[in-house]
Each structure stands twice: as structure tokens, then as C-alpha cells.
Image (cartoon, rainbow, N blue to C red; front, side, top):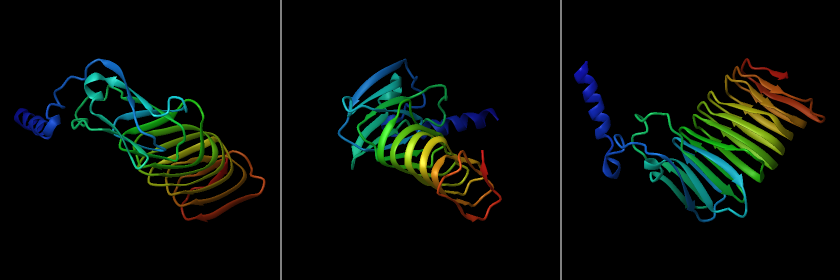
Length: 244
């Protein structure tokens, strides 16, 4: 058994090739901060062990601040392609490193039209982000927790993603799939259009109307009775439409 364990470790170390061949044995280093300048963007892509704090600030727009272990920050890529800021952790040995560290990135935005998360990535905002139209693609394993104000949001969540939205919108649309869930009970919307394919419960808050489909065992809880319409267009699962 001892030799088997040694072989496994050697195989994992050998997988760390190229310019990152020492990723698996390099110490994390002290926690430090680093500032970077990026070209204009309105879309955000994040993946693998990165937590993003969104800050709407037209003065500091174009700047990002990274905070984390000194020997890992230089392996965080921050590039802009087709107006999309891509934050990618290129460390090849994340799968055997201790999870007892954080890489936080403060991203200053002027306007935002898209958020895309993959793997173990997280996006939060401590203050309101004003938007016109925002696409949220969330097939990650970690959470989105945003305060929003504006016109319309479309969300598609998959995997085991958890999405928490607060604030005020005109319209919320989306599809909640696999074993993900949506908590928008503190997001006051005029209209909500949601399909849920999840076994987990979802929460919405519509003042004028809601148009819903329940396609699995997860319930949809709504906070207030809408004034104009409440339509459960399809119900093929055992989940129910319930007032909280």
C-alpha cells in the first residue's frame, strides 16, 4: 500500500509539466495584494478557485486588485478578449493543493452585460450594480450573490450552482437546471419568467406578473401576489407553486 501511495504522488507530480512543473511543491507564500490595469470590457468570465468582488466605479474602471498567496498570483491570468475580462487560475496542481487559501479579485466595472462562471468560482457584490441587460451563465460549483438594479436579467444555472439575487429589476428571466437553485426572494421584479428543472426550491418576488414552468420536484415559492397575472404554464414534476 505504501508503494501504491508513492506511485500516486509521483503521477500527480509528473502531471504538472511545462513552465508550471513545480506548482505541486512550491509553497503558497505570504498573502499579498497586486494591482493590474486592463483594457475596457463589459463581460466577465471567471474560473477555478477565484472569488470576484464586483465594484461599480467609473473612476477606477479598468483596474483590478488581486489578493492571495504571493506564489499563486502570478499564475492568475487577466486578459480581455472581445470585451470579455477572463480571470483564469493556470496553476496546474489545484487538485492536490490545500483548500485553505483564497484568491480574491476586486473588479471595477463601469457597465456589465455578461457574467460567466466555471468550476469553483464565485462572484459577489457588496453594493448595488446598475445594469441595463445582464446575462448570467452559471454552470459552476460555487455561488453568485449580487445586488442588482435595472431593466432585465437572464440567468441560466446548471451543475450545483446557487444564485442569490437582491435589489430591484423590471424583468427576471431564466432556466434553473440540474441541481442548481435560485434565491431571488429579495429581488423585487415587475415580471418573472422562470423554468425550473431542479429538485431544489427556488424563490421569486414579482409585483405585476409571473409565468412559470415546474419540471422537477423543486418548488417555486413566491413572496407577493402579483397584480396582473400568475401563470403556471407547465407542471410535469412534483414541485409546486407556493406562496411563502
